[in-house]
Image 1 (spheres, rainbow, N blue to C red):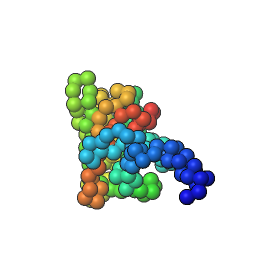
Image 2 (cartoon, rainbow, N blue to C red):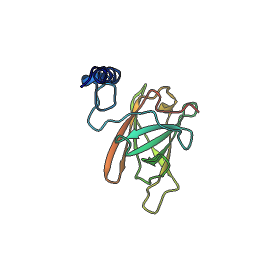
Image 3 (cartoon, helix red, strand yellow):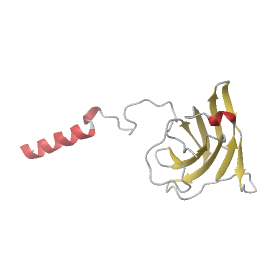
Image 4 (spheres, helix red, strand yellow):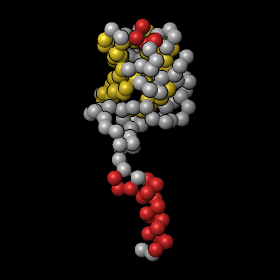
Length: 155
């Protein structure tokens, strides 16, 4: 290689974090098996916050009304536009009284009980930020993501 090409390669490696940079795109922090978290994406179709599932295989859009203690969950495809009907997602949160489960209700469920939009309320959802997890199964594969930090919209 010529000197100029070597210098360019070294600059590129330095900018990308070099050979020791994590290859998972998570900035070097560890994840438990199956754990996902919010990543920067385009605009959410309903104005909420997007949670990435399976490195872009699907997405959840979360709308958080922390004043009312409500949440709305939209299940979206990889394109963040296509709605995907699923069985009830599991939402577990930590409250001042300990762990709690948020019971979600389907919006416009199909005959099989599946829906692409789910709503729920719980006093623990008034916390800001949330401390919890959401788990959803899409096409036989289970994904889970934390509900914390910027993983919700303040409405």
